[in-house]
Length: 441
Image (cartoon, rainbow, N blue to C red; front, side):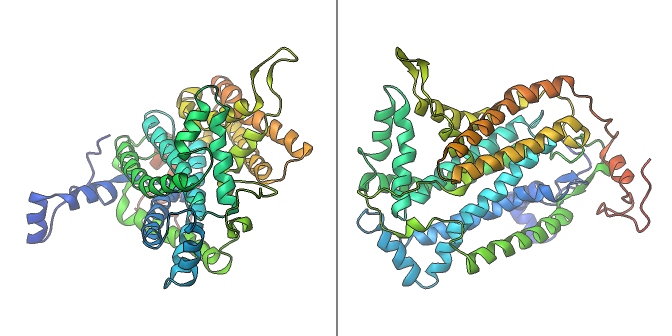
């Protein structure tokens, strides 16, 4: 989408002009995140999580590179090398805890980013490619996080690799060969550790490349906004810099303060104590669980406890296979969301029925997360089955019906009109409220 009123880049110094003629990198940055990129003037703090996710990605890349300088990717020394980093490397404890907790906070930022997209309809046309590239980033994050969790070679690392890679053996005929190919053998060992270390180091750079595509795709239609109304004039926008860089900067500082609190005062709160025990293939932990950001999907996997088929005659699909398909399907389903939700209105602020079901979905995901991290019991299994059934029903049944029959609220004619009606001064470029707010009509 072209914004004719966007301010063009003009180099001020002779060096800047010389550089702009030969390698216009400053012009590219200015057009991507500077004054040359107009942004809807009514973005709230939920739009800060995109930039915040990029900041957390860079923290993970930098801290990971430093850790790789001291890590020993051998089964007989990986655990001790992590202890060496923690005890003997100058500042090693800080880098390791920053990387370990940074993964959790990276997922926190991305989950807020995803649910903001669900609430405000950021997956709808013309931003389908932005949404799908975001989901590709999320899948790459999941693979990177799993492989990184294996590297300390503690008890939970080893048995987590055993269980997660065991999912592939559920597929008939091809499952076991795929698992053996992934591990380099029949069980997690030296070959698996070497492969996971190599891929864990590589994938963050693949994520970074996909993030560039994600931002590129976003700049074509421009950013969505809380009203879901398209930008129609210069009055609807503000330049990204300095208004939103200042807003993002404040929010990043607040988020990093919370991150630092965990890093300094409770660095192991988000981990598992069994991972401070060296890996032992002969001793299975009492309760094997993945990291907390995988718990909802783990709960869906565990919800299938009965084989599908004709009792006493034939098993058409074992429970393990059904669980694995449902777990992967719960993520792949999101790729089809732009076509499952056919409502012409994007924002939940104007979709009263959808808004209620959105918050039911949020509660359902939290319930799945709790069940995924809890010990197996009949009550937890039953709750997990109900929550998993609702998750799929939300996207496959409820959402298409809502989009067909819901009566939406009237949309504002423009973003600037919505800003003015909510008590903001048209003469104030920040979109800040007047001292005496304008009454809503």
